[in-house]
Image 1 (cartoon, rainbow, N blue to C red):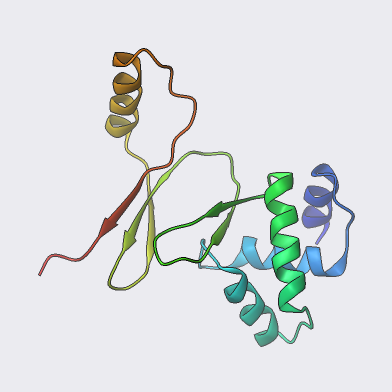
Image 2: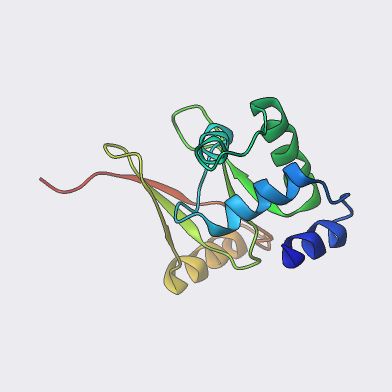
Length: 135
Protein backbone atom coordinates (compact mmCIF):
# COMPACT_ATOMS: atom_id res chain seq x y z
CA UNK A 1 0.00 0.00 0.00
CA UNK A 2 2.97 2.32 0.57
CA UNK A 3 3.77 2.37 -3.16
CA UNK A 4 0.18 3.30 -4.00
CA UNK A 5 0.25 6.07 -1.43
CA UNK A 6 3.46 7.43 -2.95
CA UNK A 7 2.03 7.30 -6.49
CA UNK A 8 -1.11 9.14 -5.40
CA UNK A 9 0.85 11.85 -3.58
CA UNK A 10 3.26 12.21 -6.49
CA UNK A 11 0.25 12.75 -8.78
CA UNK A 12 -1.06 15.44 -6.44
CA UNK A 13 -3.98 13.38 -5.17
CA UNK A 14 -5.00 12.98 -1.55
CA UNK A 15 -4.59 9.42 -0.29
CA UNK A 16 -8.04 7.97 0.35
CA UNK A 17 -9.05 4.35 0.84
CA UNK A 18 -11.12 4.17 -2.39
CA UNK A 19 -8.23 5.62 -4.44
CA UNK A 20 -5.74 3.21 -2.91
CA UNK A 21 -8.04 0.21 -3.48
CA UNK A 22 -8.76 1.18 -7.11
CA UNK A 23 -5.09 1.80 -7.89
CA UNK A 24 -4.12 -1.54 -6.30
CA UNK A 25 -6.84 -3.28 -8.34
CA UNK A 26 -5.55 -1.80 -11.60
CA UNK A 27 -1.93 -2.60 -10.79
CA UNK A 28 -2.50 -6.17 -9.60
CA UNK A 29 -5.14 -7.35 -12.07
CA UNK A 30 -4.17 -9.93 -14.69
CA UNK A 31 -6.48 -7.99 -17.00
CA UNK A 32 -4.45 -4.91 -18.06
CA UNK A 33 -7.41 -3.08 -19.59
CA UNK A 34 -10.37 -2.69 -17.24
CA UNK A 35 -13.59 -0.75 -17.59
CA UNK A 36 -15.04 1.09 -14.61
CA UNK A 37 -17.57 -1.73 -14.34
CA UNK A 38 -14.77 -4.34 -14.32
CA UNK A 39 -13.01 -2.49 -11.48
CA UNK A 40 -16.28 -2.14 -9.57
CA UNK A 41 -17.13 -5.86 -9.92
CA UNK A 42 -13.63 -6.93 -8.89
CA UNK A 43 -13.77 -4.70 -5.80
CA UNK A 44 -17.21 -6.07 -4.88
CA UNK A 45 -15.89 -9.64 -5.24
CA UNK A 46 -13.10 -8.75 -2.78
CA UNK A 47 -15.69 -7.43 -0.36
CA UNK A 48 -14.69 -3.79 -0.78
CA UNK A 49 -17.52 -1.31 -0.44
CA UNK A 50 -16.76 1.23 -3.17
CA UNK A 51 -19.65 2.58 -5.24
CA UNK A 52 -19.69 2.59 -9.03
CA UNK A 53 -19.94 6.41 -9.12
CA UNK A 54 -16.81 6.59 -6.96
CA UNK A 55 -14.97 4.23 -9.32
CA UNK A 56 -15.88 6.43 -12.31
CA UNK A 57 -14.84 9.59 -10.48
CA UNK A 58 -11.53 8.14 -9.27
CA UNK A 59 -10.63 6.74 -12.71
CA UNK A 60 -11.25 10.17 -14.24
CA UNK A 61 -9.04 11.73 -11.55
CA UNK A 62 -6.35 9.14 -12.24
CA UNK A 63 -6.54 9.90 -15.97
CA UNK A 64 -6.21 13.64 -15.35
CA UNK A 65 -3.24 13.00 -13.03
CA UNK A 66 -1.55 10.75 -15.62
CA UNK A 67 -1.78 7.56 -13.55
CA UNK A 68 -3.95 5.75 -16.08
CA UNK A 69 -4.61 5.92 -19.81
CA UNK A 70 -8.17 5.75 -21.12
CA UNK A 71 -8.86 3.88 -24.36
CA UNK A 72 -12.10 4.00 -26.31
CA UNK A 73 -12.01 0.92 -28.49
CA UNK A 74 -14.95 0.06 -30.73
CA UNK A 75 -17.79 -1.20 -28.62
CA UNK A 76 -18.56 2.10 -26.97
CA UNK A 77 -17.11 1.80 -23.49
CA UNK A 78 -13.86 3.08 -22.07
CA UNK A 79 -11.17 0.87 -20.63
CA UNK A 80 -8.29 2.00 -18.46
CA UNK A 81 -4.73 0.78 -18.07
CA UNK A 82 -2.01 1.87 -15.69
CA UNK A 83 0.28 4.42 -17.36
CA UNK A 84 3.67 2.76 -17.30
CA UNK A 85 5.42 5.26 -19.57
CA UNK A 86 6.29 2.78 -22.28
CA UNK A 87 4.59 3.08 -25.65
CA UNK A 88 2.69 0.16 -27.10
CA UNK A 89 -0.12 -0.40 -29.57
CA UNK A 90 -3.19 -2.60 -29.35
CA UNK A 91 -5.02 -5.33 -31.21
CA UNK A 92 -8.65 -5.97 -30.33
CA UNK A 93 -10.05 -9.43 -31.07
CA UNK A 94 -13.50 -8.50 -32.34
CA UNK A 95 -14.92 -11.95 -31.61
CA UNK A 96 -13.54 -12.55 -28.12
CA UNK A 97 -13.26 -8.90 -27.05
CA UNK A 98 -9.71 -9.45 -25.78
CA UNK A 99 -7.08 -6.74 -26.05
CA UNK A 100 -3.53 -7.63 -27.01
CA UNK A 101 -0.67 -5.19 -26.44
CA UNK A 102 2.24 -5.15 -28.86
CA UNK A 103 5.23 -3.07 -29.91
CA UNK A 104 6.82 -3.22 -33.36
CA UNK A 105 9.88 -1.14 -34.24
CA UNK A 106 9.14 -1.34 -37.98
CA UNK A 107 5.65 0.11 -37.53
CA UNK A 108 7.00 2.85 -35.26
CA UNK A 109 9.68 3.82 -37.82
CA UNK A 110 7.20 3.73 -40.70
CA UNK A 111 4.79 6.08 -38.91
CA UNK A 112 7.60 8.57 -38.28
CA UNK A 113 8.71 8.32 -41.90
CA UNK A 114 5.17 8.90 -43.19
CA UNK A 115 4.74 11.96 -40.96
CA UNK A 116 8.09 13.33 -42.18
CA UNK A 117 7.11 12.79 -45.84
CA UNK A 118 4.17 15.10 -45.22
CA UNK A 119 6.37 17.65 -43.45
CA UNK A 120 5.45 16.75 -39.89
CA UNK A 121 7.14 15.40 -36.81
CA UNK A 122 5.28 12.58 -35.08
CA UNK A 123 4.66 13.55 -31.45
CA UNK A 124 2.24 10.83 -30.40
CA UNK A 125 -0.10 8.27 -31.86
CA UNK A 126 -2.53 5.53 -31.07
CA UNK A 127 -2.72 2.44 -33.25
CA UNK A 128 -5.50 -0.07 -32.79
CA UNK A 129 -5.85 -3.10 -35.05
CA UNK A 130 -9.19 -4.88 -35.04
CA UNK A 131 -8.54 -8.58 -35.65
CA UNK A 132 -10.15 -11.98 -35.68
CA UNK A 133 -8.62 -15.45 -35.58
CA UNK A 134 -8.06 -16.99 -38.99
CA UNK A 135 -10.56 -19.70 -39.72
